[in-house]
Amino acid sequence: MNTRICSMSAAWLVTVCGLATAQDRLPDPPLPPAAGSLPMPRVQGIEAFKAAYARSGRPRLLFYADVVGIDQSAGRALRDAGMITALGARLEDLFRDPEVQIVNAGALGVLTEQQVASLRRNDEYAAARMLGDSVGADAVVLVRLLEQHGRRDGASYAASYVIADLRRGTTLGRHAWEMYPDDMTGEFDARRLGEYSGAIAQRVARQYSEAFPESGGVGAMRRFTLRVVGDYEDADLTGLRDAVNSVSGVGAGSVMLRAEDKSAAQSMATLDLMYAGDLLDLRAAVRQAAVDRLAMEAKVLDAREGTISLRLAPLDLTARQRMLTGGPTTPRNRDERERLAQAYAKAGAPTIAVVINRATVEVEAPLEATAQGGSTMQTGDGVNIIVGERVGIGQGTLTSPFLERVIDRELRDARAERREQASLDLRMFEDRLVGRLVDLGLRPKDVSAAQAALAQDAGFKDRAWTDRELGHTLAAEAGADVVITGVGRLVRAKAGEQPLRVEIALRAYRVSDGVIVGATTVQRPLAGTGETPTQALDELAAEATGRLVTQFADTWAK
Image (cartoon, rainbow, N blue to C red):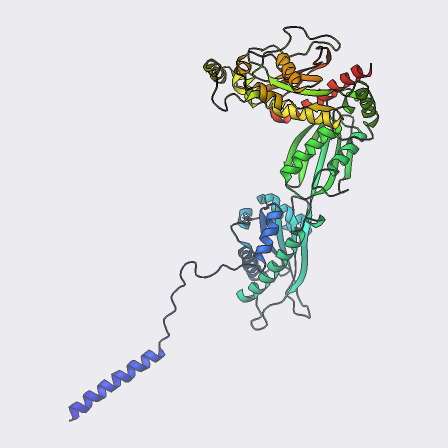
């Protein structure tokens, strides 16, 4: 009996002790969440910010937070460093997205005491520029905290931030506020920093979106700086301003001269403008405007987001020839344009065909148009040309096997000049020349229909044409009164295949009797200029137009 009671007592004690132990033990921690199951924190309005970010050109963003302390104790400095690091990291996380380029603040490395002192001495924008230049950032969000002591309102920091767009030298937004510790803990714990970082990020996103609105109005335009250097006159600068003002996408009347510095050697001017578009489009439009409006050589020296540097130099033209290069009518060229119109009407407003071809590679001497105005084209005048490029040989089956072998041999020739001449787009030059004639009020005659009709004849393709013969044939078929024929080539060095120059020789003559009414040769060096053959065609077309039309006007006025 006693034995059974003792056994029961022991079992009861074991059960009670086990229950007590189980009740006192803490529960096991929950399992960690599966990878990707928790959403990444994002600032409110991230989609609107991303859209504005794309409209602004997707700059490289840097988020940087700094604290300026009064108490220099080691403990205080360590606490401030930990808090500011956490604040900067939280801001980065709120904006982190595959479509947003964020520069890691750690790329700054460890700043020296002198660098830190210099950073804190400067105003917010200057400090942001120092930081951005150090890591190659385009835009900087700088948060600065100034430690406070003994304030009655209990504020620990006077805080502010600035959004600096370093590409344009502008401030997109700023804000100032006070920072208070948590009411319960009296500290800037993780929860408190989360509240502040969220509020800062939301305001930054809103101000950035307001700086680059979705609408196409003036508010959506960005400020650009155009730096012009070179040998130009005051009238040239005025013409450039008016030309850029007329570019599509430039704010009406937004192009203004900000500064100018003139010396004996050259002049330099800085203009500001508002533009709603891409830097690449503005770069091309500004260069084209300088060539078209001013008849000047225009070379882009440097182009980066927000700034374009342009060098201007007069083309090899007389003052009168510059007035007759095409482009819009301006007060500078109005009188000369009117005299041209009167002479053109007196001559019966003849139609003008333009036929420009590439010289065969056998012609290695400089191309020159030596015939003088008033003389008559002689039998045999002209330069052998490659007609296949004009009538589309090589785009389908050739009717002549022999001609096919000739073309193949042409393309495979070992000489550098022969291999590289195809990069010279003479169709583009022809179009630019025609466009300038239209600007001057002349009547170009399209030869494309005549060319297509003649190309149906196999003998047309097989024949060895000169530029004079082909031009006369096409112009006569099209019913033109005057034809401008020309040959061009790209000359390259035999050693290294570097482009040396572009040459185009032009002659204009009456189709009826072959009397020459104009002749010129234009060329541009390429070696050491960094200019491509295609870019050189703009200036060449302007030079050719000015020289030829001046001769036309003199001939028609007689």
